[in-house]
Length: 87
Image (cartoon, rainbow, N blue to C red; front, side, top):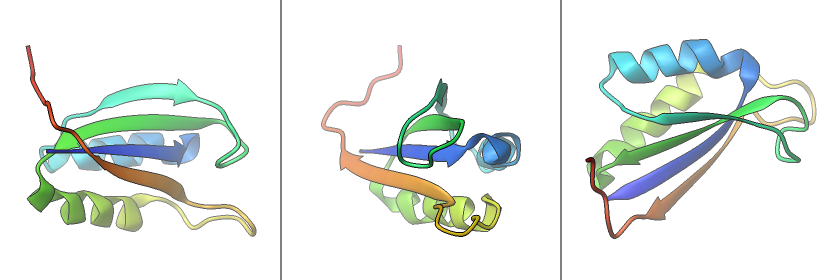
């Protein structure tokens, strides 16, 4: 299993979370602030199998609005998750 940690701009939140939900991805959404995007942002935590990582990343690429000069559209981290359990 993998854990995808995504920091996105708050303006992309609704469109992105709707698209992820439509494609069957489940996530935890947290409002956040910080230095990555230097404005209000949202952090998504998505547990997913390795074979779904590319599909998820493609959704971010297709859905996040074009960035302003000097800013990122999103920051994604994909890390190993040795334990994944839904209770």
